[in-house]
Length: 144
Image (cartoon, rainbow, N blue to C red; front, side, top):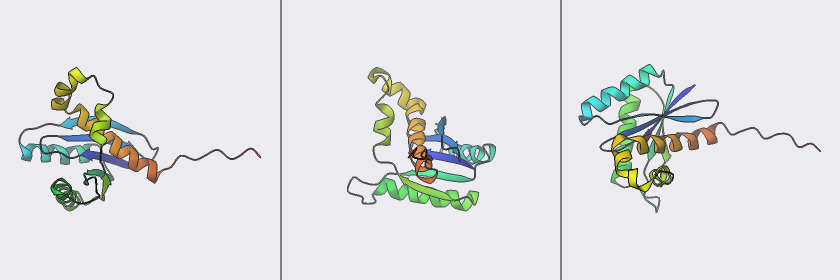
């Protein structure tokens, strides 16, 4: 099985891929200024990577309510389901962008944000969280 992780945004889409082995790794973010071009690039990525399932960030508010950004994610997920005929899983993504930025030098954040690197790191965290839940590591048997 092949999974595509997406960190949705209005300017960029962070991307990551993973499989049933349980490891997510970043892909180049989609940073096309034109929304139509970005959508075409996303569909091309799904085809080229031979994706079986999509895992997308769901930016709930801190109080668990669904705000405008979460509603945009719901709409994007529905469009992806419709056009790709693939399952799309929404995963709570609160604080993933901050976690993705935490290990980067502060003086480079602006440049890295524009490149989409942070978005793809966030997509990797989102996908890894999903894979960890879906394919938990097997614990070794107790020796006693």
